[in-house]
Length: 261
Image 1 (cartoon, rainbow, N blue to C red):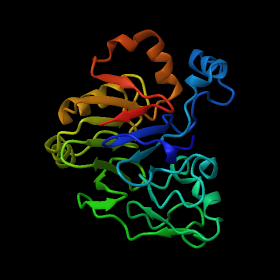
Image 2: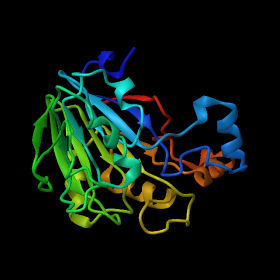
Image 3: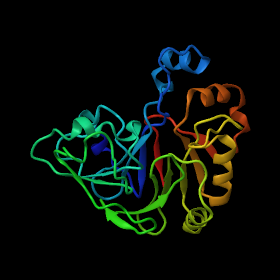
Image 4: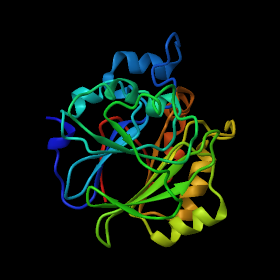
């Protein structure tokens, strides 16, 4: 069954990938988390991305996976939301663009460089004008509001709404948020927060949350529940020993997990 065939009531999100840039297992790494992932495909983490659905077709968030043609049959994908143009979030577009007889709109933050030569040779990709933060648009029946993130490249997270009672916030890649963005999302009272959490406690390197930072964001935004994504192998190792330290309202996302708001 393709992603396009999965239908749920309200707003649903499928986590296509929950890993950081190296993914899990990391090439050549023999840590416990990487060895476990090699032995069990359910523990593999591919590049962080998701697909959202309400009443219409699928809305893809990020395009770092290389198998988009297999996941989305020709004609099934009309819109792609990019958080930013780092390779692990956009490299799948390099192949997808060479399709024929299609137009796929690509929405994202202002970034003059983009990725490689995508702007010069877009193929079937129809790059839309840069988003304006906090200004909503309707895509595939979903109200999409971009929220600026703290990252080394211009980046947006997204507040996603379907109706008045179904909402998901998706925030990756980021290291915390500014006060205005945090208050904006708290006022939205989201059912679910899917948030970047790449590192164990105290090990943030400035572009991604560690556990403490992700939990602080969750506390300030106060969603119904929180799902951690963009997880690195060091965090997976930490979770082997300390997963019980996470609050009951916080879970660690898995590739293929379906979230219902």
